[in-house]
Picture 1 (cartoon, helix red, strand yellow):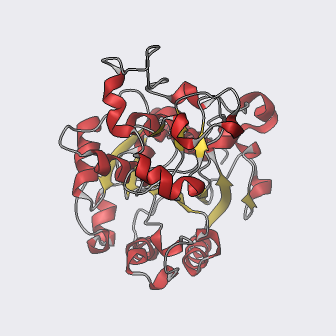
Picture 2 (picture 1 turned 30 degrees about the vertical axis):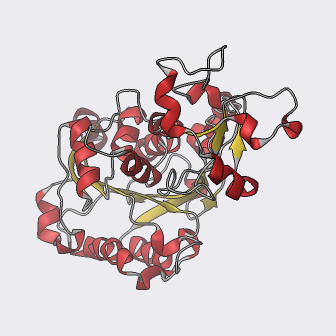
Length: 352
């Protein structure tokens, strides 16, 4: 009881590995947990610029593989949040898994755990779907079990949280004994539904997806007279060129403002139109199957709109020096606050 009371008075101390533009930190804030982000780590200079711009703190910019047990003990933290590179596990990649150099730092961090004087009490890991069948996953679970952790795993998408964005991701929640989950019957399981997060109130918490128009920065592309207004003129750079429509039209995923689902945006969005994310039809045709693609006035989602679909707060913004393509690339590696926040809230729920 004294240990629990102490936790309620003092914030959990967190380390954020592979921090990117701050999706994990925003999720922790939205989760409402009593926590302090002690340090963040990311090797990407541009991502750190964005993180610093929004949080006033620049992540440690160095190779995570150089961190030692002594280095991590100095932070005196009890929670690790990790979103390691997904390229070793994607279907489009070489699928080298643990043999991929981009997986080395994550494995090394895990292997440090038994060497720590102050090992973490909880871990949160996010990655792409496919990670759960990898040898890296097997090694992770083995290390966690050997170090007295119990785990619950999920594959969840923003679609399950009322956001019209298809972005399924793998999540592992781990607690070191004597800590335990509120729903221990799910220990050691991989779940595809968020029911444990909400318990008996899951039907009330989960809602039908909102339409895409609820997440848009600009709803219409043209005024009544067919010309761009001053405000809407800024959309010119987001319009899809006609030559790309002619070449790739049949391969495009096209959605409308009233649609309740769009595809995952990758880091190549705006550079390529095939398989990188949905395109928005800004003209609502009376009969959609009889309208040509050119008549739909197709455009890319803006970075603000992609941020909205990731459920980032309105105050999130990019520094001016970050180019449009760089903004899309950084967002393509970000996680969904709508999904991660309730997972973190569940992880931090007391049941020990």
